[in-house]
Image 1: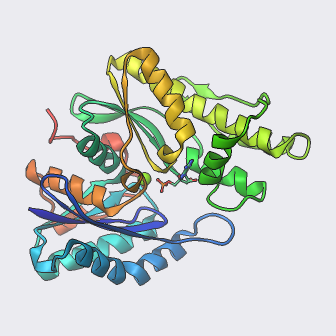
Image 2 (image 1 turned 120 degrees about the vertical axis):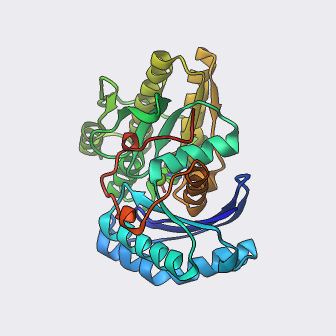
Length: 327
Ligand code: AMP
Ligand code: MG
């Protein structure tokens, strides 16, 4: 069985094709980019409309398949930006109707978890999902993926990007920071560190760091902001391991590309006797293959959707979904 999956929750439009063994036959993406400022939902949706045919064609070519070879179509149903979600859902519905194949809308965050489990061999991990807009510490318990902790303001990637943009380093800032941290030695400057229960807040850290600008070296400020933010995420992950007794961590989302964060997580896991798993970067970022894989997994477990069920859910929560495919 072969599934074609579409990702379109925010700025990335992706089309992926996956078989029953989680073999990725194609995984193409195209990103909406802005010169300045954040993402404009309507413009991002226009980008997805303009590029949908192109990425579908590229995905089929990469997989060396035709639409008639596709047995199932899945798409990112939520959470995400309404206009982006609707655009991609409309394309998925049209293809499903035209080629008479079943359609499934799937949860974006769970797609990150399931492709991560399939590709790394992690069985029952605490997932630390750190992307541009999302930061969640998630674990499976009693039929659901439970969110043990999450950001109450911005996502970890957005924090890094906003700060670097503010300092004039360009976009996205995350990879620039990563390169910088691999090189030099920096001095730590005291900045806010905000963990509330199991939740995280980054806005105080951002505001304070911005206010120090010009008074200390940029590099020290960047290092200290990143050190605090990554430590906060690592702390909550460690507490989730302690609460649940789980012995695996799956680190995913775009910020998982950071070797600095990986090292910090690795050290924490080592100290606790847990194991860290990080999927290949191409599936850590938003992508169609993870949507295709979750579509397949859900379909095989017997989940079906009528067209009416495919309405998009911008505010869908990870723990809204009944995880019937895991026992
Ligand atoms: P996503 O939303 O999953 O597509 O991830 C995008 C986010 O990942 C952006 O905020 C990037 O700044 C961040 N990112 C990408 N590569 C790195 C890296 N090497 N280190 C830190 N952050 C990164
Ligand atoms: Mg994502």
